[in-house]
Length: 84
Image (cartoon, rainbow, N blue to C red; front, side, top):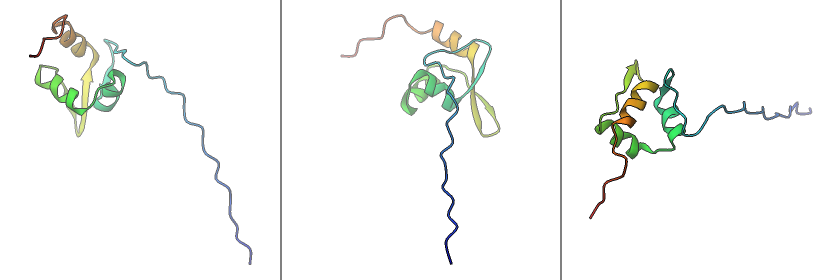
């Protein structure tokens, strides 16, 4: 008896349309997509929430509205604080 093995061909991944650092006012982003676009980690995410970034919950999904992030960003200081 021979084995009937079919060779699996890897599917090409869809082209990512992610624009790093770009958040559009009229879009909604999941937490993962938002973090990926901004290049931030979980600690940075928690810090942003602590400093006033508004998030929305859709069931178990956490979302950020683009316009709310832009308003949050507009309220941030222009220069980072010095730590001593």
